[in-house]
Length: 403
Ligand SMILES: NC(=O)c1ccc[n+]([C@@H]2O[C@H](COP(=O)([O-])OP(=O)(O)OC[C@H]3O[C@@H](n4cnc5c(N)ncnc54)[C@H](OP(=O)(O)O)[C@@H]3O)[C@@H](O)[C@H]2O)c1
Image (cartoon, rainbow, N blue to C red; front, side, top):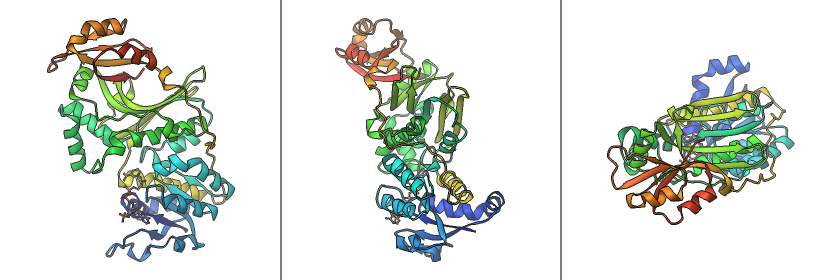
């Protein structure tokens, strides 16, 4: 019997405990032995819960228990999660986490401590919730030269965008709906301003290049300025608008990483990913395109990813699983040099000026319900050339098109 502890008995931590009970037989048959949740750390007591007798408020109870070999860190935030994870790894106790904030900030350092102490720091649940993506990148895609990753990495924003597209409602109304359904936090900033997706694409990009892509270095835009009219034009062009994390490396060695809303053509599989679902589309030089799709959040999907890591640790006692992510900072290419086509909306009075400024642009017909403005789709141009061309114009909004 492998004995484990859970730090943080909230949505994910509670899901981990329940899942281990619910799927006890399946876990036993695959692992060859059972998993037992021996202690749970939380700030609160949980009277009436079947786990009430295992709750502790003192991390030392867990750290000093020689029977506990794996910890699930599902408390979130940087502290005390960082200190607790570090202390556990230094004692040779493996840590499986859903905490993307901590992984994005301290991932390579905690991986190194795990390596030195013959244990594991695993973080499958930190990106894409229940979708297996970290393990496939470390194992199945190990022979690949991964050249691009694009992902819908935040379920809250994807739900909002889906409602804006299909119900024709504005951002504020769609956000309110997401909050009422429990998909968005009361303070939705981390989701709608793109910070959550940005951390996740930074983690995936780090695994892609084996060095550290700092999320602070990744240009990040959210969805709060996307409007109903943007969706009207997108629909007329048979495209969707999605908040994406993108990471691509070209043959000249340029490495661009970005989080922003994109126009996604119908030919791209990300186009049809709707509601709270997430998807990650990866290109390897020999395997070609791979798509990973599923629930990016929620109690059981996220707990499933955490427990999959626990099982990996239990199968490999004293052995550190391969994960190439060095602390060396990866220098990203100048975002001003990245090339896109841009969908631009302007005041109607700017039509002639805009056609001249964005040479070769395709002028778009106003869809039903849009008045007093004009729009166009530029040819491929760098960000720098685009901002120079836009300088003298009253641009209402612009959205990059996924190439
Ligand atoms: N929910 C999801 O669907 C999901 C999906 C993917 C990843 N994640 C990540 O998973 C982590 C946990 O998310 P969650 O939704 O489960 O959060 P949550 O429901 O708020 O659970 C966190 C739990 O940890 C407890 N906690 C916080 N600080 C503590 C401390 N110092 N000592 C002991 N216990 C402490 C909290 O207690 P109090 O309630 O008393 O503060 C709460 O019970 C986060 O990093 C999140 O980003 C969540």
